[in-house]
Image 1 (spheres, rainbow, N blue to C red):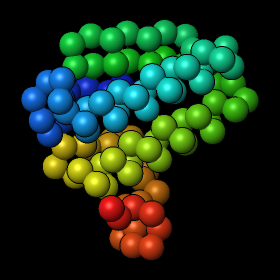
Image 2: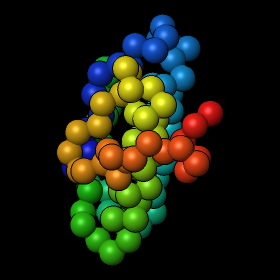
Image 3: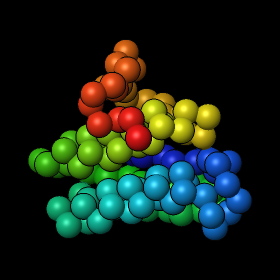
Image 4: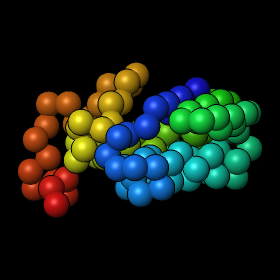
Length: 102
């Protein structure tokens, strides 16, 4: 299960690039899970997306890609994004020279 909740607060609704980035990653994950027939359920409510899926071969790759994208957004906008759950691959890493700075 993946749960995305809250609003980033980076900018007003409709102009929030942080929220839009996370949403785009979520919908890409939903598309990938649909293609491999692993998607069980999606619910989008005000400020929340719930994604339920089956553990099938290849799903871990999609989840890793989603997590990496979200963690990079968290790295760039730490006041606006908080990732919980799986251990971050960037927790003890300064990202310098690794494509994280811009």
